[in-house]
Length: 444
Image (cartoon, rainbow, N blue to C red; front, side, top):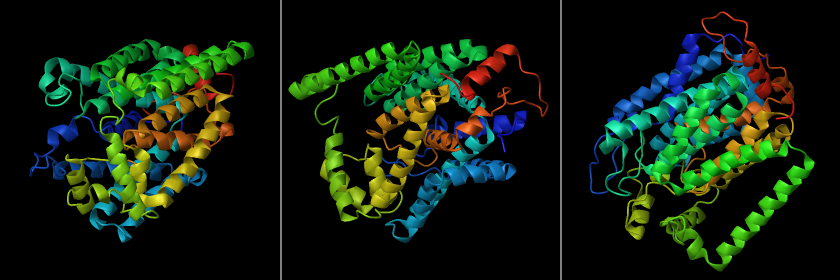
């Protein structure tokens, strides 16, 4: 059964609102209570916790509405749901059972949101929906920076760096980098809305620069580089070979420069050999992982406010460490080698499917670019199996959509933008061309 062509304005709007919630912008800062002790860590907002419940209910309602398609998506991509269920099951051995259960349920809801998007929307409709959400968030961050700099610019550390609707500059930099890649892809393939996507690309890239996030800048460059490479390779085999050799030569030069003078290379990007203290965190967490290597400490339990291991980690490093600053390490801390293995299986399958699809359709190029960015940010941020995260929901969407198979993607109707109001309208020639250019199998 195909993704539904008839999607009402109400459902589309509700899906957008849920995605806005999962971006965790503005509201968590506005509703977060003040820190209650010298650690500087604020407890969770009870009001915000309650606000998640309607979002979870909407996700369940959406899945019930398309339960047959949702079940097919689940059967094709079972590993991530299995990972979420493992997070809930970790309540049994968790050092903080209540926290692991509550956040495990949130992870399951986040995963189901990605499955809903994959089962309900075709590629173009889903990417347009995500694009609209990110356009709004980028515009709101710019507006906040102009009218309320005390809120949108960092005041204590990294003074003057933009954080927008988030609490930290790297969060804005990462989100803006991923938004820039999405806008660039849509500007390339979605001709009817090209002007909007180009405007969004300019705003998002400006926010990457204003955030002063080195990882964000690398992420934006990586995503845009994937698109440029795909466009370049359309010129033919000789051009593709030239690009491959040039990329290999550049990589070797960078590796040699880093091997000979790592301080100079890192210093050029405002970093040192400790990567702003991350290496010390990773070393300490490596020892913690070794103590519970198979199943970990329970999902997110290590980072609870009352966690004894976290307390001793912060004492040893002389500052309050909020996370492992590495997705793989945090996953190992939460769910051990079992959790890492479950995610790794899904990742390998998704990468293989994306590479195969990139030879046939533009959506494969998007998937490869998204995955490249995702893995880059996973090296310095806790993005793997992240609850209430639009990034994790998008990863699940990409993986599940690829798992549904080439045949289903090639059969997607040309009128892929959702018909609103329950009535289908004849697509214009340009809209049909844009839809087929993204969804139909063919050269990107």
